[in-house]
Length: 224
Image (cartoon, rainbow, N blue to C red; front, side, top):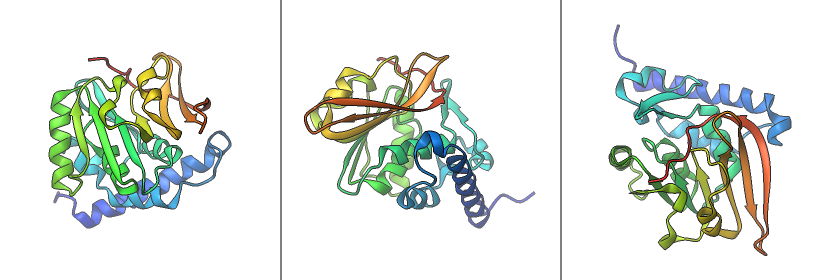
C-alpha cells in the first residue's frame, strides 16, 4: 500500500475537526458553549498533527485519541487539546506560557493564536525534539526551555495566559503569581484518579476564581 499523501492527511485533519465539533456540542452544557472559536478551528485545520507524533504513529494522528510519545507520556486527545485552548481564549496580542511542551503540538496551535509563546518541558529529549519540529514547520518564535514547569518562567512573567498540560494536585502558586491580573490559566487539577479540567481567572484586583469544566485524566505534573 502506498503512503498517505498530504491530500489524504488534510482530509483526515478535517475529519478530526468535525469529530471535535461533535464532542464540543455533546458537552456544551458543561463547557458553556456549543462550538469552538473560529480561530481555534482554523489553527486545528492548519497545524499538521501527524508531524508532532512519532513517525510510526503518523497514520493514526487524526484519530480522536491520545497517542504515546515516549517516556510514559502521551499527546492529548485532539478534543481535549482543542477544548483547553478554546477555554484559554488566547488573543493575538497575548503572551502565553505553556507548561508541558511534549513534542510541540499545542505550542504550535498557540503560536497560531498568540503573539508570543514560551513553553517549559521537564524532559530534555522532548524539549530538543519539539524545538526541531517547531523550527522546521515555521514556528521558530516559540521559545522552549528545560525545567520544572510548576515554577513557570519567572524572568518573562507576567503572562496573559497559562496552559498546563499535566495535572497538579492544586494550582501551582508560582504559576498563579506569574499570571497577569485579568489573565486566565487552564489546567487539570486533582490526583490521578479524580482530575477536573479547571479554568482559573485572576481579576483586575488580583482576586482568583476557579471553574471546573469536565473530568479528565492526565499524567501528573513532574517537579525537576
